[in-house]
Image (cartoon, rainbow, N blue to C red; front, side, top):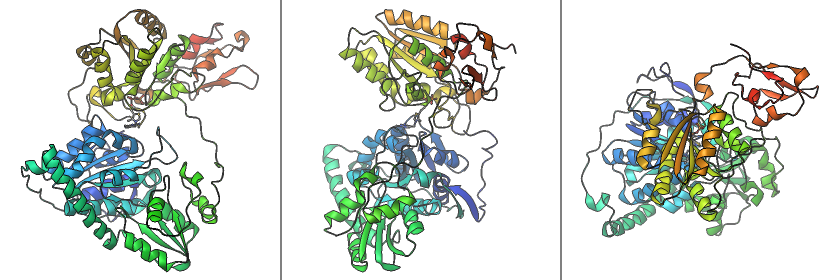
Length: 586
Ligand SMILES: Cc1ncc(C[n+]2csc(CCOP(=O)(O)OP(=O)(O)O)c2C)c(N)n1
């Protein structure tokens, strides 16, 4: 989260070296390349790109309401002649695919770089898609840095390629590149006047006749990009011992260098369209050719199409993250070794108001069509009260579909967070109103985008740079959409929420309940931990049913409260029928 102190904007006098993450290096490189406009919607592991760009006063940077909007804002700025950047996580690019596909046709005037960060291993994502395929599908050039230093360098190259070929350029990071830090040599910002904006309907108005002509331009551009791929130093042959040669891209390059320092490598930094001749030449130079990549067989499929003989990963390596220690097994043709570390179980923070809401939903035994945010953790036992989670915005639309399939079931509620509602939930609400679907839809309004590190959004009344702006009033918006009832409740008032839910579920109306309570990480208020009276405890463990990290079973078979973690929310107290937990007076 940005704060006022952090927003003590950077000056243009650059130090020589900075310790930068891949995300920060993208921001730095883009700033040096004369970036003027940047737009994004938060998403791990790409969030920090815009947070870093917000520190450069020369860049007009914004949190957009979703990725489609962000792409279109950046695209419009590029047409207007300003170098522009859009950044998002992999699934965010799915949201922006509609404009992206056709932007490939129109071209862009000034440079437009689309930074997309994939998340192999699903550190914080709902799927493990490999966005390299988008470059092939949308016929767009793709660059892939292996580390932060290359991230800075490649984003500059991407702007050059974008303008040289009049195309958006995809720059793909993965979590390890985006989040690892490196001592990076940095430079000054280039002074770059805007390109003139010219009206050109045949190029920018994509009606069928114009688009047909532009499709030809896309195919012609691909031919020229293929020729470029053969020459660009972004595709680098490193000849060492010729017994073993790797073809690779992205972070896998570093793993190869670490594990097989003597081996030869063809490192593809410009990884689509492919440099077929360079690949063939390299294959001839080495005795054994091995393709190493993370996630899908993107390189492998292409090399197979070229008719080359090479060794590729066992298919088991397509699942999850590639790790340096996998390399010997890959070269030996073995399957992926078992996961070395057990994953840490994520849990809602102590003091989180989502916990109170999910304890009510669980007690009422409701079917919950959920969504993506911190609140998805309500799916984990013992709360176990989120029953679907597909993508952002689906909490309300899946609710509608489920109710259409189960018309007699009134115990279904749709749930999503405030940021998610603005991102893509509002259309689902309008759809339900329009198509006369009754039901109860809950917006968990914690006044932030908590999941990705507490970014502001339109209903917080603050911008990316923490400037005040018009506040979107969610209850007014829901009423304007046509919801028959819009109730606002304190998310921590479980009794009021329970009663309201029971009442609204009985009615044949469309209700939005806004359960409001700020994210605990924003307020960080702490009251005293409840007093525990062991003599009254019946060891029923009902207090553990709220899945609070501050309360657990003790060695003596009763319970214990971790005072350091307890925020004094007293949700556990509410669950104790024996008065063994007593709220402590402030
Ligand atoms: C298309 C897409 N963009 C971004 C993300 C990353 N992301 C996951 S949930 C979320 C929003 C969470 O905010 P909110 O709905 O307010 O819930 P909270 O985490 O605050 O409880 C974001 C940005 C994503 N999963 N999918």
